Image (tube, rainbow, N blue to C red):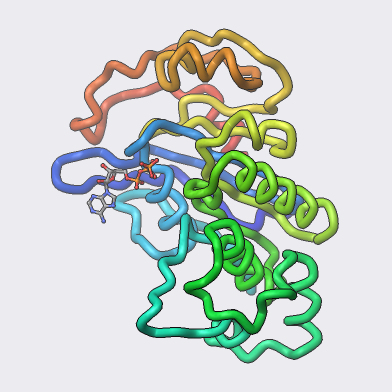
Length: 257
Ligand SMILES: Nc1ncnc2c1ncn2[C@@H]1O[C@H](COP(=O)(O)OP(=O)(O)OP(=O)(O)O)[C@@H](O)[C@H]1O
């Protein structure tokens, strides 16, 4: 299977801190990968590197020729002093064909407010508009950075259901950062646990009480959600201030392949 996008031994060092250390991750066709990790773990930085928005200090990003990426950010702050209607917002970057716009609007459930100004929309509606924008170009890969972070639980659930539907119906791969582990566990195929380096990864198919996971997310979260199957043999107490700290990452090689 051809990889769409890969990080190969990517490290990012900034201001004496290690933000990413020797991270390797590949996204193939029809993959659904969710990156989890505590605040400040480097999840957004990894997405930025993978999308070519940030140059890693070491390592490289490989991208399939002509890869189309649709990006959904955490949120859009709609300014009421610059009123813009949804329909216009969706055609800002590139003029979408009318049929494409109607199709994507129906798919994401935004048809009824295409002619409303952005700033009157609710948080959940705005996220669907951002999703529609990302889908307009018919991307091969959808990248979502905590897309439901600012929604209430009902909104989160609805948004993740929509992502699941899009994944099921389209020929698209998904790379998502999410804190809502319990909500995405059923849809995601693979979970990557990041804490500056890849701690572990695997299928989210069983609940475990993994001590490393608990050390990252806390006992309550571990109890709440299904965790993937992994074993890893290092702790998280090492000092990330040293960019060349020596780690053994058994499973990273698998991701690399
Ligand atoms: N351009 C930059 N220059 C220097 N440091 C940065 C830069 N971008 C991010 N950082 C730092 O890198 C670390 C990781 O940030 P990042 O946003 O990737 O974390 P995250 O895992 O997405 O966290 P959260 O879950 O809180 O969104 C943080 O300490 C942040 O301050």
